[in-house]
Length: 365
Image (cartoon, rainbow, N blue to C red; front, side, top):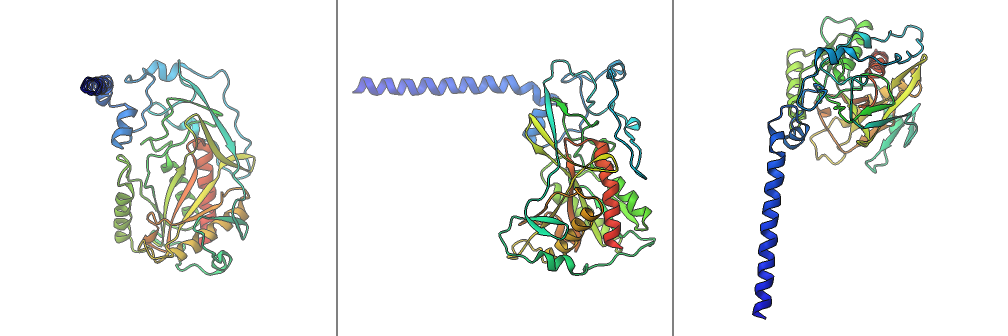
């Protein structure tokens, strides 16, 4: 029995020693990546987001020749232009510090982008529907027909709307393609390809319709943790400086699908393809989130949802109604809106920004 006990003890000691050796080997193998400023592994481990600079090879900056020499055999076909729709602007964007679908991707796996129009799913309300995840039996129709609890002033010299981005670095594909390469990293601080570009389009359209708008492009997600706390501080500072602000919109983009197959939500307007939007409206029915104005936010959200579907059929995904607050507690006109996904092209997202600006203008006036 003593011999058997010693054998078991020796076996356990050997296994422990082997595990230590294996752990040390793994650490030594991965250690160099921790000192590589472009390493995605370090970014994931530290919850720190890179600036989205695209590298042709890991750890190497693409040369000027690499940036300009490669051109596709055929240019992607432009969508048909509808009346009064903005022309494509992609040729004016600088891709030299961002992912390029048509650049050299030697040895990289080519992955799928699938497009989908996300339709009716949930409770019918007006022209659209609500995906009610709360389990509450709620009278959405009555709230839709109720007046807004705030009023914006048209042609004012003071901003009425604030647009900002908690996840300022969320980005889109550079072109409308049905594939992406494994190096695609859908975050960047290049505003030509991020949600900042969408915010610009929303703001431009609101301004054209006489609604003065402040677009705050402060970056809040260089480190992911604490993004909402930092963006709330930005909003509070902006509202303190501009007491006229009634509407506060946090513009994001979604991510749908898997690492191998991304999905982009789309609809068509005027012969052009655009990104669908999803409005998120939180609930604090049980008073757990210090979010007393949640029904006033929902009123606003339902009006955006209904008006968007009247003006541009297919534009909206089901309204997401659930137990969350994000920064929507800040005021009655505070909402989070996701425009497309990381598989939509920047052109599709920007077109939706213009359309959303028109929708908001109608709701607010």
